[in-house]
Length: 284
Image 1 (cartoon, one colour):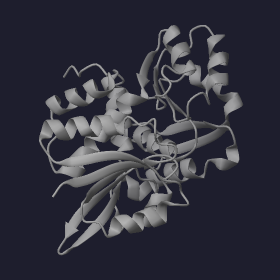
Image 2 (spheres, helix red, strand yellow; image 1 turned 90 degrees about the horizontal axis):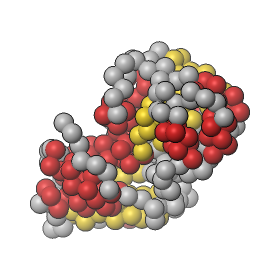
Image 3 (cartoon, helix red, strand yellow; image 1 turned 45 degrees about the horizontal axis):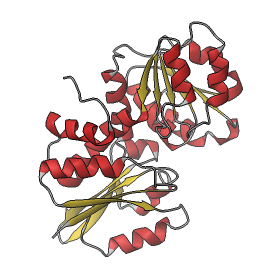
Image 4 (tube, rainbow, N blue to C red; image 1 turned 30 degrees about the vertical axis):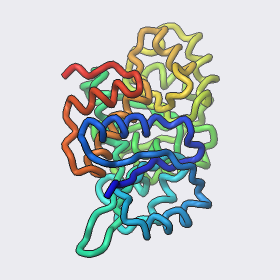
């Protein structure tokens, strides 16, 4: 029987996940059809109820704004997702005669692999832009890379609950600060992770453009449509290393593909995933 997987979110038409997953499954020779489905927070419970009765499903990728809401829709949460209360992956696992929906967070591994591939090998002095679900994964990733403190810059300091919960869960010191104070701290950081949607950091980028020497570290901008972002352009213009969101997407997708297919994702599979979205092939 052909199996099914999909990426869920709202909006979702821009997603590159179908291209990456489909290329990987074709290379692996497994019969998994992967699509993009527009699902809101409000419609998520009804959608998950339809999935429960359909044995063809093997996995779901979960993007904004569903990463927190999905926790209530699964049977079990494992790994980083259990600590963070935020997930981006649901794997359907056989348990005797029934199927369990198990939540994971592969964003953490995706962030770490993306910035390490860009050459960041030391414990980073880090700043994160945004306080939502993806920032929770960014906080966990920074902690796993050895940092003991992280600054999180948000447009509204009262809406950083997920970031604060993530910091408490992984045991890292956190300072939540208004985005209007970000430019100086960001310019001095070894690693900046922007979890903002496209164009949300444009004003900050304009401030950084007027600061000579900005961008000596690594910037990971998780937004990838349109690309490059204004922030990425300014960072690159000042000589900093820029990691596009597609790099993170590719690495976190590789973990999902392992969970959905049960297959190893080797360098050949990574290469076809890169080809599917125009990323350069890896140099291992």
